[in-house]
Image 1 (tube, rainbow over the protein chains, first blue to last red):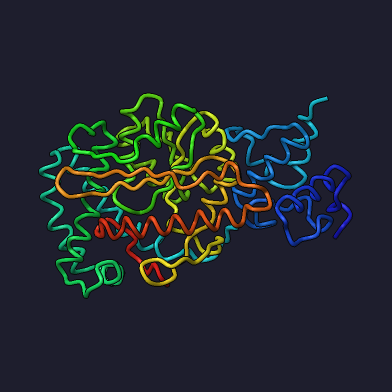
Image 2 (image 1 turned 30 degrees about the vertical axis):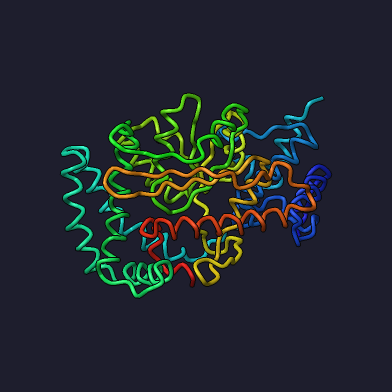
Length: 91
Length: 300
């Protein structure tokens, strides 16, 4: 893994949460923060995405809405999802 | 999990073959009405009986199982005719034409109970008879709103077909091809929608499980049941059997309540719900055998 592909602190936390929630076989630290979460990449389906949304809402108090035009961008990668959570976290 | 592999047989063959037929029937129905459109069903079905190799074989395999005898050409014709009739009537159901039909409903109390609680539910159907009849009933019942979940490819086609018939309804379709699809489903349930999904077909690479169905194991997708467990909603079965002429028999049955599924018991609960679903599907296939519309080798 190259330097720019390493996870920052928030991304690492989120990666661990996703791996535990979905019971993934991949190591959290091995998730490329720029790789797509959905479909190819990490290979999550829309039901997995719902699980992620539910746990994100519980852990960070950030609601992910489906009709957001930016939905595709938010779910594009671990990095973009983490950024969205940090920007919208209460307090 | 989804994969980008080759699409399964039904997404390619079944839908591509039926689309020109669907468009033609819609066109006739809207211009000439149901009796005239129904006359066209005979030559159309005869054409398909003669020229459709694989769907005909699939129909015969299914009919042999469900009827318990060797099906003849007349049986296959009747099977195609029921399918074409349901496609045709869909146009009228979607176009406020419920009054044209004699619709018997069993288990309406199941629906009323959920409506009163305003909790929404997952409405599991199959490629069996008419699912649209439920949507038509929905519009007769104030407060009942039905959203359909389907594979994106089909959703696109259905949306474009619906736009021609009744644009309001195109809004009530959620496609599975985007990451936020299930989050959208969750929101609709929260608004009290009945979220319909046909739970008898899966895509390649999608998680599925085999259950005995009409005498041999067949693969069913576990996605719809995972979804129900995760969304913690009641699950209601819906079968709308076409009985010939203007008659439809609609059955609503409470399947299970995955809303109380304990986290550690989820796997078991999903398994129980799936096995129950397949059992009930088999029951309804035996009651109304010509209503099963999966024209590919289901037991492959």
